[in-house]
Image 1 (tube, rainbow, N blue to C red):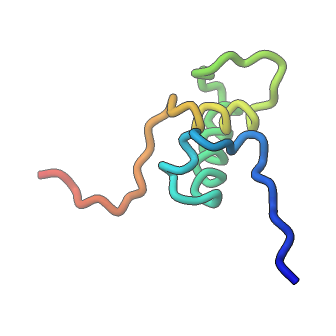
Image 2 (cartoon, helix red, strand yellow):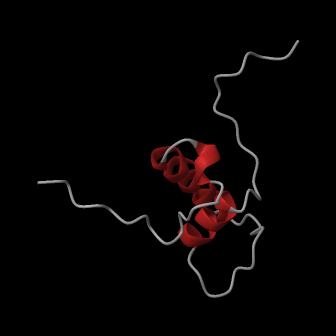
Length: 77
């Protein structure tokens, strides 16, 4: 028997920035931190509509509207 194929979440589509992130855990981690910023009053960088901060954060990350770093980079001198 082969394992059932798992369809990607509609937000994580082929051609999105998710491939640049490396994995779904990194996507969720960055989105979580951005969601906390949005809940604290940060201005959304995509059209907000009636969506919740968590969904807005995911859209911002996938649209590459926020900058982030992995922390593995050496400090600049």
